[in-house]
Amino acid sequence: DARVTQTPRHKVTEMGQEVTMRCQPILGHNTVFWYRQTMMQGLELLAYFRNRAPLDDSGMPKDRFSAEMPDATLATLKIQPSEPRDSAVYFCASGLTQVTGRPQPQHFGDGTRLSIL
Amino acid sequence: SQQGEEDPQALSIQEGENATMNCSYKTSINNLQWYRQNSGRGLVHLILIRSNEREKHSGRLRVTLDTSKKSSSLLITASRAADTASYFCATNTGANSKLTFGKGITLSVRP
Image (cartoon, rainbow over all chains, first blue to last red; front, side, top):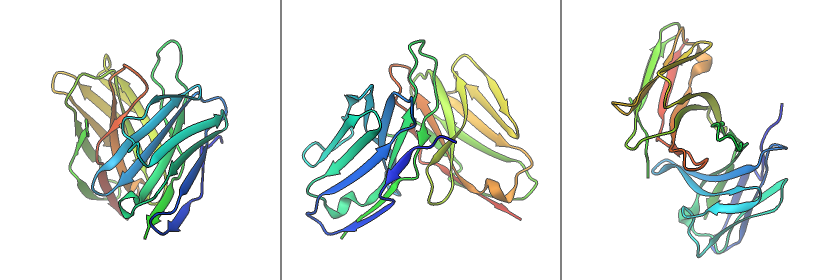
């Protein structure tokens, strides 16, 4: 069963440190999403890519967050420097956007639980 | 910003009963999707309904969509303890692949 894989599953670090979260999308999927989930805000879209090109990162704080897809099998989300308010669960999801425009579901990884002390 | 808002926020039922969850949204949509999230896990897609559809079924799940009222409902029949999870509705406006999620409903099914 194909799955989205996220690493690490848990990360605890001190404020000011750089944090890198990784995601391996499902093979063949051409769209990758990064979400952040907190109790207060719920699930927020940070950024997403299609065919490795960034399409929308308007949900991401630009001064400290960056998202990239070095290749089709890896997406990264970096926070530098990290702050306590960045503590959340970060999810990666992938999907297949078809030229027909037929809507498709998103497939989520199990997330990275990030705690910034 | 949240497009979908689920109602109720929490629901507790006995195993075997039906669970009905509602979702309202603000703007026109291309499709609406329901997802389930078990504790400590990622979201799992349950069902997708397009704006030109009124009802869809998948196993014990039944989803309805009323675009005139901008609302959807998810019915889980004959609930099981394993259905205990959070349920989210998500809307897509069709301009792209983006989904906007509600804050979710916590469903507890008592054995």
